Image (cartoon, rainbow, N blue to C red; front, top):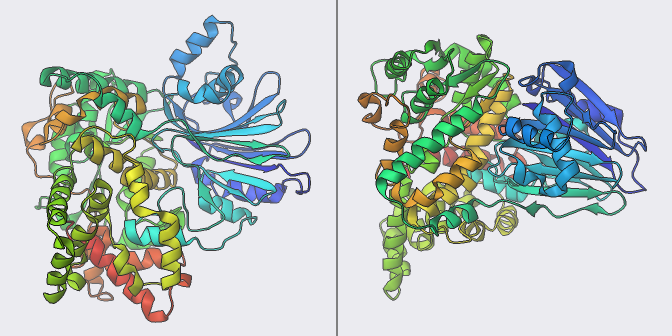
Length: 632
C-alpha cells in the first residue's frame, strides 16, 4: 500500500513537470508510505513519477518504486496488492519470464509488456497504478473493479496529473480549485462525494473498473470501463438455479479462499474485530487458513459499557473462541478532541463517517501491525442491511400509488396539508422517486433529498450540480444490465455507491493516515463473481448465516443472534457533555451529530456554495437531522 503521483506534459507547448510540484504532491502522502520515497523522470523530461512506499511484500530496497522494467522501456508506480501474484508469477516463469524481485509491483510490468491494456483482466486484488511506455510515448492508468484503491487525476489540456489523494494534487499547486457543483451537491445528498466527482471541478476520480490512456501530443482518452458490478451480477443470475445446500457450500468455499488469498504478506496481518458476524467469521477463516499468530483489535468506550453498543465482551468471546490475541483499545472524549483537527486534515474528501476506522487503525499502528483484515462489505454483498427488504417494499408501494390516477400528486397534497412534507421530506420522496429501484435507493440512502437543498445553498449552484450528477439516471445505470433479482439490484447499487464512495474511501484515508493497509476479503472481485449465481438466496438473513458457518468452527450463537448495531463511537455523548453544543438526541446519531457535520463542512470550506451566512448554519442542521433520522 502506497501513495503514487505522476505528471505528464503531453502537449508540446506544456512546460516540463516541476520537480517542486512533484515532491510537494508526493510528500503530502507521506503517511501512505513512510518506508521509502523516490522520484523518476523520463529521458525526454516530459514525464515524472513520484512514490511513497509502505513495505508489505518484498521488504527489500529492490522493490522500491518507481520501478522500471529490465530494458528500461516501462516504468510503474502502484498502490495496492495483487493477491494472485504467486500464481501469475509462476505462469509467466514457465514461459521464460525472469523476475528480479518478489514484489507484486514487478508483475504489473511483465503483464503490461505481454497483454497491454488487457492486463487488468489478469489481476486479482485492490489496485491503482500508472505505467509509462517509453516506446509508445504514452501512459496507461487503471483502477480495480470495486474501487478499493483511489486514483484522482487533473487534465488542463496540456498537462496530466494523477495521484492517490485529492489533497495531494491540491498540495502540488498546479490545480484549478474552482468548486465542483456536482461534488458539493453530491456530498449534501449522500454524506460523501460521489465518484467521479470531487470538491473541485478540475479533479476527477478515475471510476472503479476503468482504465485510461494519456498520449504524447494527442491528449487524454475517455475513461474506458473494463468491469461492471451490474454486469457481473447479471451474468451470475443467468445461471441455473442453485440448491440451498450448494449455495451454502459455495459461500463457505468462496470466502475461505478469499481470506487465504488476502493473507499474502511478508509482515503480520491483524484484524479489526467487532461483535458482528463479518469480522468474527473472517477471524475464524484466518485460523483455518493456517495463520498461527492471530491479533484482533477492538475499540471500547466507557459510555457504551453495559449497553448493546459495547463491542468488547462479545468480541472477546470470539477472540477466545478462535484462539486470538485480543487487544482492546479504549478511546475517550479527550483523545477524540485531541485528534479531531488531525482527523479532518487527513480526511481526503468530506465524509460523515470513518472516524471509527481512524481509531482502530491507530490502535493497530500502536502495536506495530501494518496490515489488517476488515469485514467491510458483508452487509452490502450478503444482504445484511434492512434496505434489502425495505427498498423493494418502497418500489411496490410507490408503484401502487402510481397506478391510481393522480395518486402520487394526491398523496403529496395530503402530506403537505398535514405538515409532513417539511418535517419528514422522505415521505414525499416515496411518492416522487420510489417507483424505480434507483429512486427508492435514493430515498433510503440520501441524507438530504434534492427538494431540501434550496435551504442550504444557491439555487443555481444546486441546478448545476444536479444536472451534472444525473442522480436517477446514474442510479439506474447501476442496474444495467438487469441484475436479475431484488437482492441483486440492491447489492449492485450498494456496491457501486455507498460501499465505493463512503466505506472504501473512508477505510483508505483513515487506514493510510496511520500507515495501515486495510484488506477486505468479502469485497473481492473473484469472490463476488463466484457467489453472484446464489444472490437471490441470500435474503432473510441467510447470507449472514452462511458466513457465520463458513469457518470450520462456526461462530458462537450469541454473535449470530445479536441484534445488528452500527460500529459507532459515542460522539453524541461527548458533544452533549461539552456544554458548547446542545445536541438534540432526536436529531443526531453517533458521529453524524450536528457538531460533526458542521466541522466537516467547515474544514473543507464549502461555504462558497451558500448565499448567506445563515445558510451555513441551516446546512449543518439539516445534514445532522437527515443523518440522524431513521431511514424510511
